[in-house]
Length: 373
Ligand SMILES: Cc1cc2nc3c(=O)[nH]c(=O)nc-3n(C[C@H](O)[C@H](O)[C@H](O)COP(=O)(O)OP(=O)(O)OC[C@H]3O[C@@H](n4cnc5c(N)ncnc54)[C@H](O)[C@@H]3O)c2cc1C
Image (cartoon, rainbow, N blue to C red; front, side):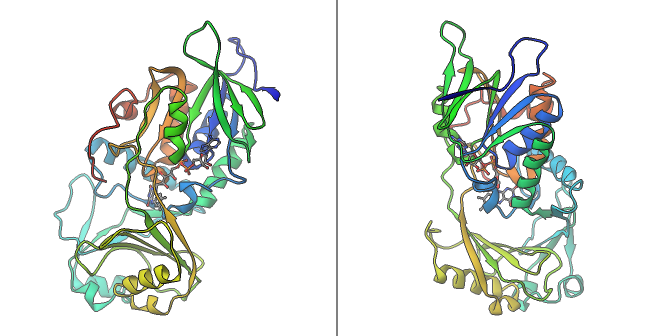
């Protein structure tokens, strides 16, 4: 085994940080940590970034229906940061079909009349237009794989060392000292480090267990995400909703004309194995909202589960079981990646606790509860 010292631990040297996981959250944190002068090594099991949840995400940038209010605030602030990346995110606004809720004073929206809808989205079906609709003009969507690659590339440009196809297997704790980790052992070598950021997505429970931290993810039904071949421009907004009661679809047409259609709530279980029939069914449902989709051709289908801590809220910070391991795991990580990256770096590199993260500490019992997302 090779020993790779990522730097020296004495005070005048930069803080050595090993980030395990190069999804959106790990890459964003690595970028911000390297920018603040930390000596960062990113360890990623896959051959390229965005092979985990980040690459499967529909990446709707929103704070819609998010509770409690501090979590809505966290998401809203991060949405703002995405405007710095016009190549990686668009903000066309969301039309929510079947949305009869009152306006939330903390989250701007407006009711749409049928005349409004005809002018904003003339291709929506009569069934869709028969329902109440609301416009959330501040919302957008990201290109998550491209954003993930960009964040990681920026980390490298700031001096981070990125180790792809390398699996973090375990952590070494120096004998006779505190509970602190002194090195990360991978399948290829050993990285001495002052601090570890655990950004392992759905593998967080397994890696946290090695540190003595019990970590439970919520078991949510999988989302079926259909990507179509490019089509002529049809939609100008994100469209969410459904025609059947309880049915929820997310539909967006990307820059190249291809649609991303996520079917995430409705009748029956969402199996993890998908086939051509899955694609046909999702398109059939989507066509009831946007009839042009009856002629769409499936390019590929993705099945995804967002890594969601059991109580539904992010987990960010140190756990008493291990004083130098920072846990970073969240649902809505696409929305939250830019802000969480900055706040994590503020807490680690600047040693300035972030007020915005005070509700998400691993010291709370996040393994219980039933927070609804
Ligand atoms: C279908 C779907 C839809 C979603 N929709 C939205 C949405 O609309 N809006 C939104 O904001 N969020 C959404 N999310 C959630 C969001 O995408 C995730 O919260 C975010 O991508 C999590 O990023 P991450 O970096 O924590 O995890 P991941 O992207 O999963 O990255 C974790 C990485 O860690 C690596 N890893 C794990 N263990 C090890 C190890 N031992 N050694 C080395 N590497 C390791 C993995 O290979 C992986 O690359 C969605 C997610 C899914 C799946």
